[in-house]
Length: 123
Image (cartoon, rainbow, N blue to C red; front, side):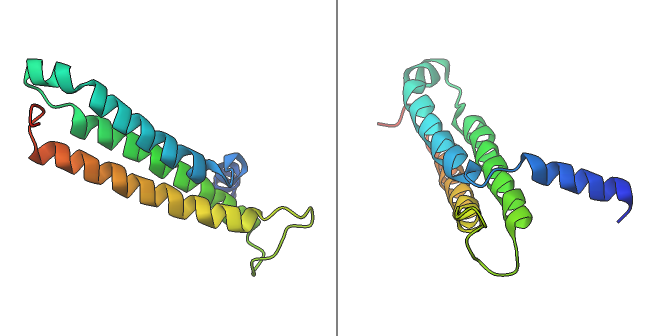
């Protein structure tokens, strides 16, 4: 890896925060659920179904949170999961953030797939 690539990788890890996957995933899922419920009347009257597109965008946001947690995971990896010198468990928090972000992205994608199968007016 050249010095530009190493610098770019270091820049990506510098913005990464361990808790991003824990925050972005549930927030994206809650937004997905609320937006989908609030658009039922509109989608039924218009005959279009925005659920899959909304789910794709919000699943991507959840994956971005997981990626940020992964960047923090790499930055805080010291070979074994120990507490950082300041006593904060960033390594563990990053791992849970990755898992949470991926899990919520899968849940959001499943809701989007249901939108592909079901019509908006099904009650």
